[in-house]
Length: 261
Image 1 (cartoon, rainbow, N blue to C red):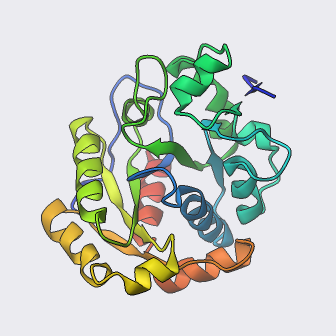
Image 2: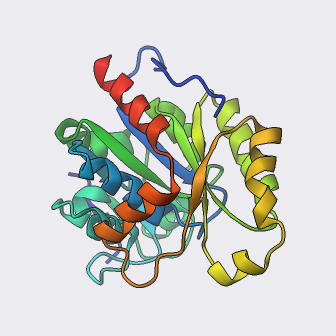
C-alpha cells in the first residue's frame, strides 16, 4: 500500500474510455474548496449502502491535517458511512500542509504520480462494486506535477458529480467547472447544491433561483439541495437527508449500468 503521511443532459449509460482499466463509481468534485464534498460523498455512499449496495469511499489524496485526530476527510467519510476500512486505506496519500496536493507532496518530499494514485486505489476497487471518490478542492486543482484533478477523473473514466454552494456566485463557478470536465470528455452526472452556511443561504436572495439557472444555462441536472447538518454527520442523519432532499436515482442507475458491463 502506498501510504504517505507527512507525520442532467449528459449521456452516462455505457460510457467508458477505451483501452483503460475500468473503474466503477462516481467522482465527487466541487466548485471550490470548502463546498462540502466530504459530507455529500459520505451522504450518497451512506444512502446507497443503506440499500444494501456494496459501495466504498476513496479519497486519493488529502492535505491539511494528518490522520489520527479524526478531522481528515477520510476519517469523516468513514464515520459518516459506518465503513470499517482503515483511514490510511481510504486516503493512501495524506499531507499535513494545507496546500494543493501537488504543492503539499512537493513540500513533503514525495513524488506523486497518476500511476501511483491509481495503484493505491486498486485494493478498494477490487473490494467494492463501486467507489464514491472524493477529489481535492475543485476540478482545476493541481494534483501532481503535471496533472489537474480533472485529468485524473478522465484517467479513471468515471462520471463526475459537482458539489456547489447555494448562494451568489455559484452559477458562474458551477458552469466553469462543468465546462472543464466536459472539455476532458467527462460526463457530468449532476449537481448537488450544498447548504454550507445556513444563515447565508437564508439571507441570500439568489439562492431561490440558482438551481434553475444552472440547469438552464449549463444543461445540467440539479439533483437537489442538501441541508446543513447540525452536530455530528452520522450515517443515520445523512441517509435521512438524502432521502428527503436529493434525487440519487441517476447515480443509482449509473452504477447499475457500470456493474452490468
